[in-house]
Length: 365
Image (cartoon, rainbow, N blue to C red; front, side, top):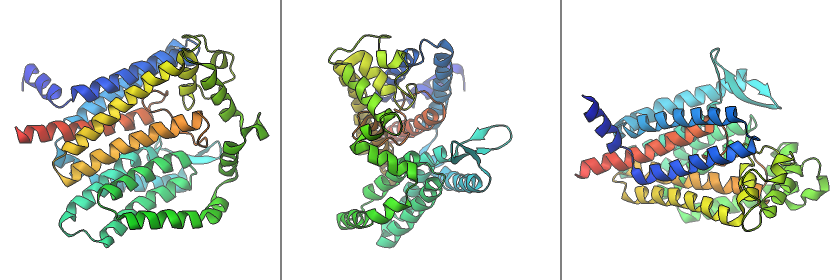
């Protein structure tokens, strides 16, 4: 294969519309990260390196035939479960949580791998039993979801467990989970609320309580919520201007390069800037739904739908916690917050979307 054929192959498997939306969000990331880090060029360069690694991963997955993705489902899930058990037994404790596993050459966070492995495994399982689906198949698929979520909750990592639970639930829903079962689960969850409340860690209960009245501990547990809402509200319609955010640059806003980077954007670009940013997210999510609707197989519909809906939840949870309508659960703003692991996981997911779209287009033509 010569250089021209190689170039055509890679361009062929990259969806231009989805890629343009992702590129715009990544440009926003570099722009606002420079301000959030007080002009730290090294932090921006590090994020640029993360983006480059994520793009390489996206290209590799996008050019992977769909049957290869299916073959990866079981080994990826099994590897993830082994690593999660390894974290539970031998993981390093940091800030009161056991989330990282030291492999000697690097520290890894296996829960990030499960964001892809869980829906991939569940979609593979449903594909194998498409012709004879019964409630037992949904029950087995639910167990495939519950096991990693339980291990991640034990770490504890509420934010990641919510995202993985959402990705698995969407596969169950798209696979035809009955509305009666869904309503029954919601009723059961509501009835179990007192028991679930006592099962939470103290800091998790405090975060939920701060949602209703953060001022009761304004300098402690409620500090993040209060400062986030102040930054968002102070931006007004047009914002204070790039690099002019007082909450950011006077060091009032915590975690401003990661979980609360949306507050930095809101303060500096205001309501109109938020509309632009939300418009980019809607474009990416909308493109994901189009790919889902056009998916040609059961497996690809489940995967594409789960990836797209989970990306929506990812965005909603972060913006919700920054604006004070959801508890602070440590979920970064997808594709915008600083970080390598979460960005790589997201780009892998979008690589799967592109593979689903472009490979099935080749089959049709």
